[in-house]
Length: 439
Image (cartoon, rainbow, N blue to C red; front, side, top):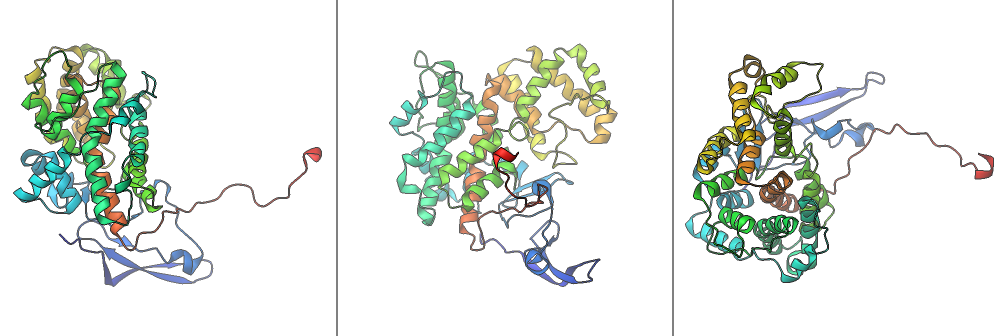
């Protein structure tokens, strides 16, 4: 699918007038295929000597993209035009990877070839196994992920030429394929178990669960229910427009850095608790609440504007109506709990009661504080026996697909430039140096 470029609305423009000097500048209005109009300010500094101030870039489009669209007011998330709930219910993660990378759903032959490429790139260079030994046993898995992914560029020299389209795609396939292996090895290393090698007879999600939980002493059979839930978690986290980590990948890539370094930068950004640690925060919150009979106390604290306590896993910064990913994962959450028979586990019982209250409580309903994707993914991962330290690792595993798709799109864009945000300087004005003897 050839992506459509933004179009100029010749009948509409925005005029900015200098209230002091009376000078005016006319700026064009751009239209994407869907979404709000965008004012083109690229010539603002050159014509006026002024630039805009937008902390966090929350009102600034940094790029054109045809990959993901979000309408937070309506609760819409589209991958290449496809609704996230349709993809989660009818597709699988490798197919979604292909869609994000290439713009269209694959036919059977294309999908088989893609799955084969991903499957047969899943092993790591054997020398990388020794790389893990350089980390302390108590190293956080995200620290290991940052280091190992960044080190991939020293092992795969045949896919670091960013000007070669074929090498870019090989690097993309390698990262999607090897991320589950790296993630599982980081977990195994942290608990002192031997690494489990990938198996080519398993699906992407099945292989990850096998590498996570199998041991040489006995056979491990992957539950289809758990594998499907994990597959959905991967789909739902594959991309999310120009979020902090994706913007980091694009910014690193704009300098011409190799793809492995760019993805390592994205992992480092995702590690921040304000970005990738939300589902871990849900579990910490549940542990703080402690028991079902204390839920109302904490719900009241959440309603109190003067109380610093926050209910994690409810509402969303982007989605003001409902999180479409949560709707999908809610069903999977209950299927996983039924499959594992762990509903009597205190923390999970507490989570289900909190969910019931949030869906019925007038305050939550009125404020549209519905359980979000982090609430349900945290419960699912907890039920599966995955430690909270691995939650953000799984997020990075899934988001790698979006990162490489966004990176490829940026590199292919002839208008892309090295990222160079401006600043509103508030420091000292120029002053003269004073020798140390006179200070």
